[in-house]
Length: 132
Image (cartoon, rainbow, N blue to C red):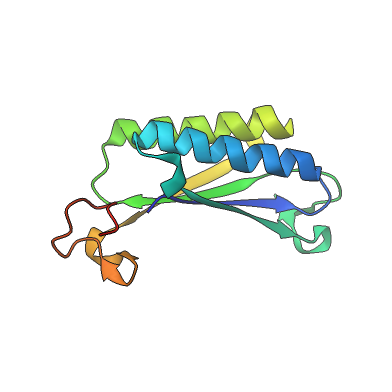
């Protein structure tokens, strides 16, 4: 279930930083949720600079990443707090951005509203993450 989406300004970071970030956030998300990394889905969405503004200031080289993490509702507050901090730390470390400009949120999803292989995970499956 874990889904991560990172929004960045196109051209503000290198392809190697993108690749490093995707690997690092997938690994860190799996560690925080104590699950196999192969169950994490992560992607970057790149936005043209002329379509991005931070504080009403057009991007023009100013990087202010935004991330969204989707996880099951009912996750402990401490786990959510650790995840928000860990993802922010990675964006700062990998991309070299100003911590104060990184924003992020967690979107909780009820297990019965999430499907794997077409079957809702809340419908009597052995585990929310099993695929049998």
